[in-house]
Image (cartoon, rainbow, N blue to C red):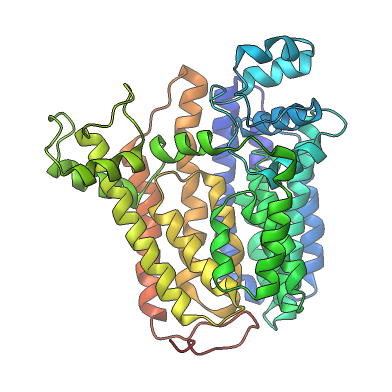
Length: 467
């Protein structure tokens, strides 16, 4: 982590500093490759030293400016909105109705100006909103939030270490987390709430193997309440885990009755694409069938209706036809959903009741590989399962992540361009350079593990469940 700190602290314009931080993280990933290939040779007693070094590294990263994303400012705004007695779902930050309130504080004025897509209300579910409120109890503070995110990321590593030890896995595998630049940089510099969600995820895994099913369900609320997809874990969770998660998640909505994040989630789900790999290939294939500059093709009414559900209304609010780009986008979503559903069903059939990580791990990896939006910090959700898989010798779930954690920094090139020119431009060649090594690693690793029985939650080989 010394490389992004040393390069990022060098004075310069925001675009230049961002480029140096990303370059430092990318170079640090090369060093991380040494850890990936040799972590089993490290002395067991060095793990505690590694945690101490990790703390120092995170403290150093907190000295860098938070230039990697605008999400931090949304978190601070949402927390401040709640303390003012307003629901963050009711109005977008850019709404004129909030002008007078925001103008009453220089801090709020500055935060408001930094929020990305301020014309859209918040998308974060109530559990995440309550975290924002707790972190902002003393007033909106970027430094405090970043410290909280970094502490959550380290807490997730600590919970994973305990999980490894409890299940008889090699606890040295936690080094694959502690020395990975991705979680450290995305929590301390990117300040993403995903660090809190992953803390809930790893804590839930540790509590599950300790037999604390109810407490595991409450911990899972942090994961589900940050990114909704971990709800898939409940398909293989024990009854007390499901009940506790559902109850606490439901209670978290009480302060926000009458308002929901539905409108913002709809905008995000319908239209947004970014750094997509396999999904972009699907769209490209369908654009061969329906060229983007062509007229709306004749389609049955049910196809048009389904397409509108997937891509939303057109700019005029109509729903009578689908333009070729919309049709290609919708068709790519259908194919991606089919692949994801196949992975979920196949994995569900191979796992036992209660072993929800064995279901959620492959599902998370598949989701990231077919998703239309893949930000670098999304990979944090794969990391716990990659570490567990590495400890089990399951290369198919581990090695693609380790490769991707080194190539994902390419995804920040448009961010640098945005800060320099005000324009977000993605280069398809760079996207190929990011994803191609990942798919090569996936194919090679899968070929070597196709007949290997997966290890279950308890850390021993388990046969697939009947039916």
